[in-house]
Image 1 (cartoon, rainbow, N blue to C red):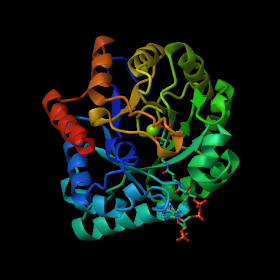
Image 2: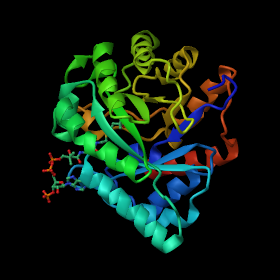
Image 3: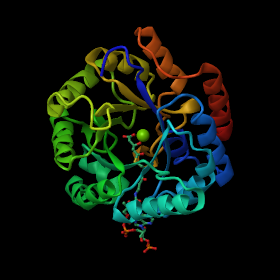
Length: 311
Ligand code: HMG
Ligand code: MG
């Protein structure tokens, strides 16, 4: 990708932002958040997760949220959803079939995201499975998603530090990436799940990731193969974006209103903070002399609405 192309942004607020909220948020309110976010100029909205409602009850209405969004989806925005296993993928496929029938939409959900970690402790806590077991689950998911014309993102969480296993070796991140790339996954998303990264600790991870991509900086859809997903727990996310931009990363996740956090990354008395907020990300990109497609007024509107949801 040319240095002058706009930086790709995925807003994860309807998924990462709402998954940890103790308040019950109405389905229509979630859809409203996604509708506001999709007008901000982001390339992608991570709308929800098809995970076990026993694990994440907050997102148990994923299909209903997509149903409300179907008539509103802009042509140039990608919708994505997390799927931990084949059952989740099947639920996404059913949503797409319904949208085709009801609204004549070829594909409502364009991308599914599988998720694993560079640390065993987090993998077990988040998915009740070892890293190896998650990867085995993903093999049929990636193949079937591709058969249905869906792109696949592969998250690797805890790229710098794990709340259970401590400091993570960049090579462990690279090893998981290599396994995901061998499945022909379309995009790797590196998650600093607990916001522990600093530019110093992030640099070797990003260098390792670039190395594992072996020159493949864009995928067959023309999008960056590498995305960075930063949480802002300790206020270092903006510095990390600056460093990542210098290293050539061209795709980032963020959340309107800075919502977010993985409930399975929190420890007793220490709830993880939100994703980097989209305004902070956009500012960091502009400060680096690069551009985005973000419309500031629409972003302010979405961010205010998002912030209002968590009080
Ligand atoms: P399990 O309990 O080991 O597996 O969960 P199970 O097969 O026994 O399933 C438990 C129940 O869920 C069963 O129901 C299944 O049928 C059902 P029951 O028979 O007891 O009535 N089930 C499902 N229901 C709906 N959709 C599904 C599904 N699969 C099983 N897809 C499992 C294993 C993976 C399902 C569970 O651990 C899970 O859903 N985990 C999701 C956790 C999660 O969503 N975490 C947050 C996202 S990750 C994150 O936030 C990090 C990220 O932001 C990046 C970063 O910051 O680093 C992405
Ligand atoms: Mg996250």
